[in-house]
Figure 1 (cartoon, rainbow, N blue to C red):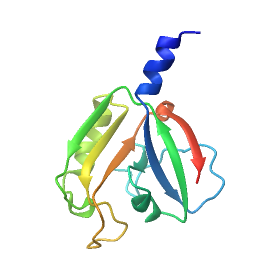
Figure 2 (cartoon, one colour):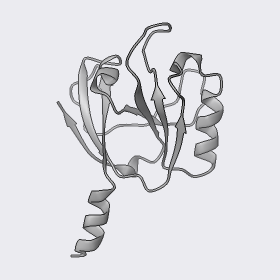
Figure 3 (tube, rainbow, N blue to C red):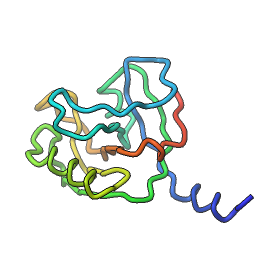
Length: 134
């Protein structure tokens, strides 16, 4: 067994959360938005409370990305992002595993005030190494 590789993989893991109305998810399946304007992806959050906005059941996900694009949104609301689709498409086309929108107000409804969190948009499902219903 390659313990150095195992340690390196362990060191790079990130714990994030996914909200769902289903209590029996075994794997996360990428989807696109209603207009098909973004690549198929999975949305995760650094915050349990943010994930709770999207479903009654919260899943803890361990991801191990190796190629991340990080964008600091400085407190901007997800609903006010005019460059959202462009940034996601750009990261996908540049072969990133995921894009992280740091310091974003990610609420289900427009004009809802919530704490800042980080939103992870995952393109490559192979980076999801574990999913557990909390």
